[in-house]
Length: 114
Image (cartoon, rainbow, N blue to C red; front, top):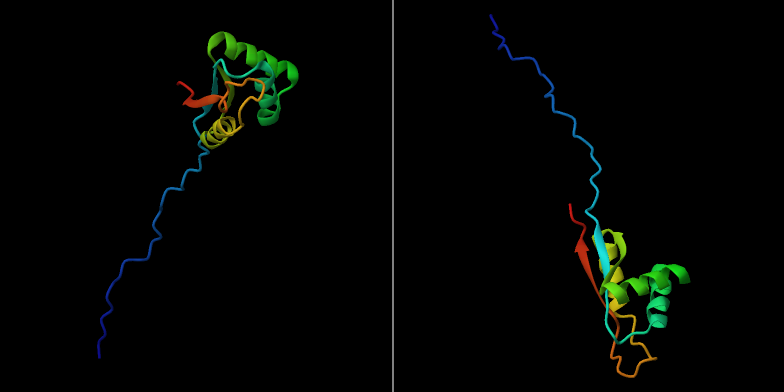
């Protein structure tokens, strides 16, 4: 009795290129404080100290910059943290020192160019 053996190709493990592991950084965003005439320097300084942990001196410099330029970059960070900081500014509350003040300051976030 004759048996025929079918010739099967040898099993070869497929070579797959190793997945490249790359750490991709999230694009940075600026947190920008916008100026208005309804908040005092004391309010801005207190808010910056509480929300961003700035010293009195640095908070005063930022308050002066927003007063003179209409806007100032407070932080450059990830989108999620930028959104959090913007929202914290928006909910910080009114400046009780000014009777016409009806709420918090305004802030925005913008992607860092480039």
